[in-house]
Length: 231
Image (tube, rainbow, N blue to C red):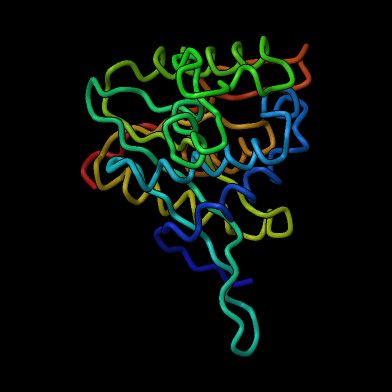
């Protein structure tokens, strides 16, 4: 397959959400912390992509399969959301992105700060609210602990269609973001599943903490890549 990388646009948002929803659905953790209905889960994932277009510090990049024959248009097969965090800037998160984006609000998904003012909040939609609060809370806590107030780039979300896993689309999406990271000469941070850890290690990320959820059924790795000086 041949993959082309380009900036994401408004027309890509729902498809990006569907790719993320399908990519993470098999996870025993996501099964418990994502919204309980397919419509709300799609709205949550689409909200993360939408927020990349709404935030001037965020970049939505997509991968397209350009190997289709004849006059068939390229097929969107993956995306990544990279966010630049300035010094002492507010730390981004999946939860905040989904809650702030218009697609999520339209489906009634809000964060815990909404207090019912705008409709059904996230905790009322998930299968296991206690686990969801633990997951998102620890995710934010570790991000703050390891990056503090330093300027850095954050890979908030990356997902590809299952059919193209291992074929290079994810690698191209990571490299695209790291080109920006290296231009700025700063650090990068992400959370990865054990399956995705190897890809990020090949790009220079290292594991600084492993977190276990659902009695060890799911492990997440907090990873940092040092800044490249003088590039």
